[in-house]
Image (cartoon, rainbow, N blue to C red; front, side):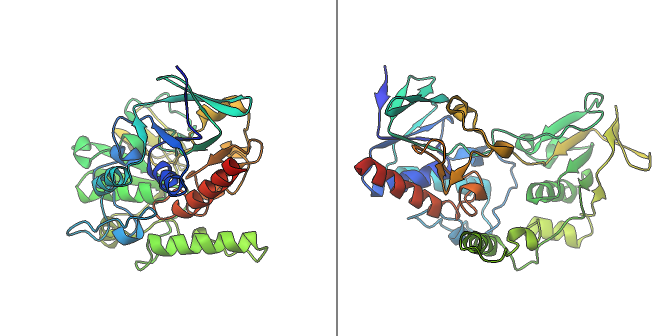
Length: 353
């Protein structure tokens, strides 16, 4: 049986909830389809020690401040899960959990959304599936030879899983630094590898500043003013307390990228070798957009061309929360509110036309 709503939001994580908040305020008929069985989005699947980059009050979705976590300046992932679950309930957002979307298709004046629980039709779609489900693993020589474990950020949980082992962590961003610190502070034999020397932001910079800088850069570009350099000009790694502790103890000294994997570890540019039981790739993600393939909207690097959040080649579709190309800092809790508001307003205006 086919069901209908004026708007279907695909994804019930932070971006989908922010879209739902604004659609509800505008009186739009909508539903949120979420593949996960329970609220909390991708935050349910992170490593145990993950910390936000900002205090709770600066990590909030529209309409509801995130409460502080007792004893913590930077909340952990479970605190975020609890906040998102409460947000969904507080605003009575119509989220259908456990519904996996297989594809979005053009169907005359509607878009048809195929799912494992039957089809939906809608006059507009908001895609808010994020990136967590599509980890990126680089092609490195010798990967098929390595006899140990190869993991991505999404598979890491806790240092105790590597007790008595030697681990190589690859990646010079926040995930790489946090996981490297997590392991080394727990006494795990860890080697940190980065493409370039790690760039730590100064200790007084957190997500609040990064959001302001990203917003200023986007505004400058939109107004044709000189490029500000954006967040990248400040550094790559926010010094949350565990990272700061490991750095200050001299435990976060990175080595340049190795040349290849071997059966028992890695080989460096000087032909020396280091044995390892596991390699953890903190190498980022790609947008999870396979459900949009039937629309034929592909663009460079997997980025569908947009104006703001609206797809240029299919104006009934909005993309939300995938990164700066769908709104400044829109992949963050604090950053997704503004593009979600703009998308909801555009959709409401279109439905009224």
